[in-house]
Every structure is written in C-alpha cells, then in structure tokens.
Length: 70
Figure 1 (cartoon, rainbow, N blue to C red):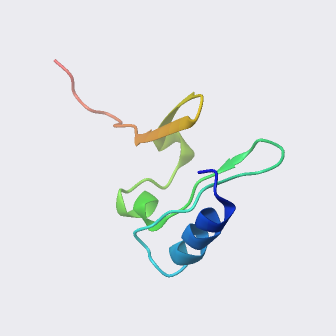
Figure 2 (cartoon, one colour):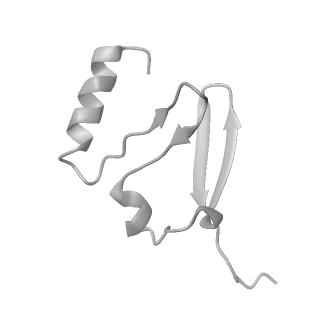
C-alpha cells in the first residue's frame, strides 16, 4: 500500500474491527503482525507460523503440527 492516508484509515479501522489485522514494518525492518485472526485460527506461538517473502509480498500460514501424511 503506497497511499499513507489509506494506510492510516485501515490502521484506525482495525482498532474497532476484530476481523481486520494491521501490520507494520518498523524502521529496523522488524515486521509486526496482529489481529484476532491469529488467535481465532489457534495460532498463539511463533513456531506455528510458516513465513515466506518475495518483493512486495509476505505470506503467512499456520503450520500443521503432528499431521499424519501417507
């Protein structure tokens, strides 16, 4: 998102809408991810998340632990 006003509006809206998440990248490059979607999907530990990144995209998904695969 390149429009600061739109980003600010999304961040403000996310404070009142639990279904929205607002994510930030700090000046030091650290990524902060938040939102009720994390706990609603039973994701409460960093070890439960797989992350991949490419230019302009950060993808997070819940890692399935102890899943039997044939």
